[in-house]
Image 1: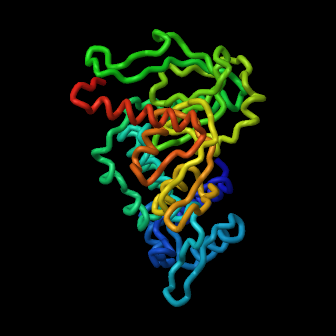
Image 2: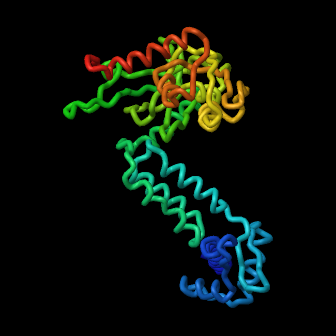
Image 3: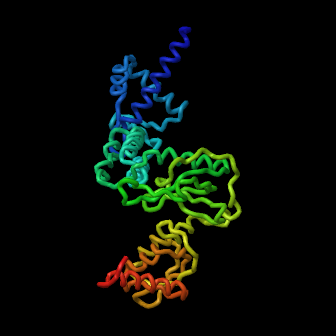
Length: 342
């Protein structure tokens, strides 16, 4: 190696060390910075000699040539990174999202959290350790879900169908999984991946049924690579509003859609907004109640949601939905009578 190349390489390594040290050891939020002497001592621990004067020049180069957001506080005689790649609150959001996801195993959540923590300064990392809050959380045991989801994303990007096996859990210890379609593959056209209540769902079009359906990703097995067959249902998907679709579907149960008119006591405004979004129109009915009209895909989880509020919520129309609600309540009530059976 030529002498000039060696000097250039050594200088580049020194600049990388200084940058990484500043990013990991300074925090405006925590009020923690480093001095030129601190940086010099750190470089010495790496076998690199650097005077305070050269460090001033190196940091100036990092500011000008590499746009590193580092500033000097003349009162504290310290350098600070003023705009980290990710703000502490952004990293906390990422960690909370990972740790609250039911479809990610606890071990994989730890691994991803550790990687996210590596993006933070040392003062933020301790606040990112959320593992103690989820130690006893029931998690899906399929550790390949995160990687398998990449195949779905790939298929969507390539406008391609995919195949997989789908199952439901069974109380049978010898056969804990009950496979749909006798274990044969579903071939579907994938269009979107959605989070709902900590679970991950695929929204896909079934050509043979000519309908869209939700599939829990953690209950999908042997997800294929993109099959190379063009997706069906593209035109139908264009008419879908996924955000609105999620609001009108309860626990990802598909059903016949109705515009449902409901009356709620005022204290349930939060619950209505949580389910249907902040843009839902809540029309006052009297001083204690309001009325909403929302599109809903009718299903048992919807009726159960309404029943949760007891006499504080009531379906007003249309009549078929009111009748189904009555039948739902009657069936549950009958089951709890002395002679009732499930």
